[in-house]
Length: 141
Length: 68
Image (cartoon, rainbow over all chains, first blue to last red):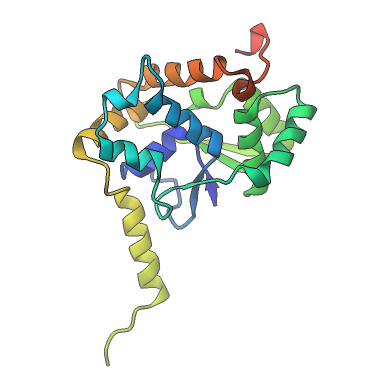
């Protein structure tokens, strides 16, 4: 299983995964990263996807087909996420759950841009021995 | 002898469906989503994602000034 971020999840949904992503692996998005995408659909303001996307497009994001993209069940990860939060000064559920998923699923995490990694996640991942892979779009490094 | 479906055939079909993405995505939606995640709208998209986290301390945690 490869744990991926919001950027790669969207690229997988639209059929444009980066070539380095092994499609023989199950691709999984942590639940709170899915929540962040859902906020872009439901919340008002800049970047609101409901204003830009059709109902069918929104459904594909709201309820991804599990053969294409799985959303990780957060419940088995919460204890590890809470432990990470306690050990590293409350980095929040987004970072805690993502790191817990990385620990459980091969000590690696995949991101679609370095900007979406975050300083705290990078520091804690390094401390925990979780490798971070960033697949920037072509032309952006 | 009829050709039987092998495990490799099934895996290749699985890869093909993965490469194609979700069939519910429209061409127009695909274009917008690619602009958000790989193109000219990446900055706006990231700013919106960051704003959501900053507005929610449970999700985003406790940041100090030099960690944002």
